[in-house]
Each structure stands twice: as C-alpha cells, then as structure tokens.
Image (cartoon, rainbow, N blue to C red; front, top):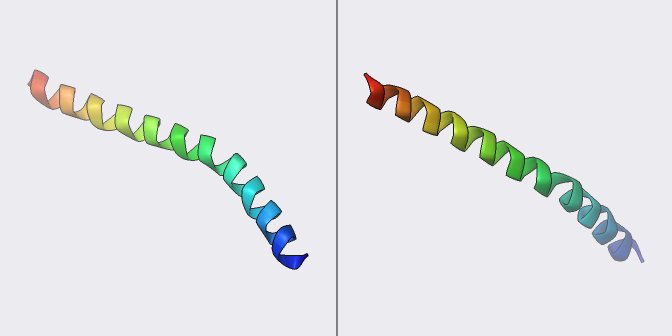
Length: 42
C-alpha cells in the first residue's frame, strides 16, 4: 500500500513536471538560437 501511494505521488510529480521541463527546454533552445543568429548577423 505504501508503494502504491508513493507511486501515485511520483506520477503526480511527473504530470506536473514534464510540461514545465518541456517549456524550459523550448525557452532555452530559443535563447541559444537567438544568440547564435545574433552572432551570425555580425
């Protein structure tokens, strides 16, 4: 029963965490891309 409860808590963390992780990756990728295109423009 304790294992099931910890698993449920972990799944809830994943459901909340994955969209945040994806958003962070998109933001970072955009920032790197912008910095690279600015460097190429010089």
